[in-house]
Length: 77
Image 1 (cartoon, one colour):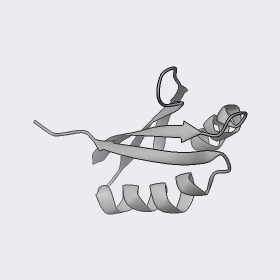
Image 2 (cartoon, rainbow, N blue to C red; image 1 turned 30 degrees about the horizontal axis):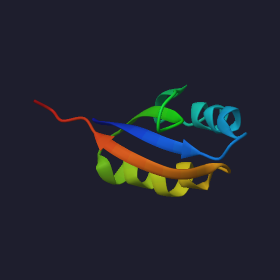
Image 3 (cartoon, helix red, strand yellow; image 1 turned 120 degrees about the horizontal axis):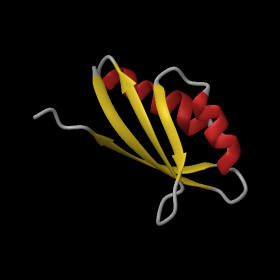
């Protein structure tokens, strides 16, 4: 299993909608609005990185209000 955190910049007024849409996705384990330079952090889990990539590119990037994402893979030590 591959785990990553996705940091998202969201257009003003769209945070609640984006959180709701993220919570509908089975791959998204948690999604939180945060303060600072980003607006939402989502914990995403998938069988491997190609599956996570498809979730990001075909699902998350298509949510109205998502302006930018930054994906951070969890390193297995």
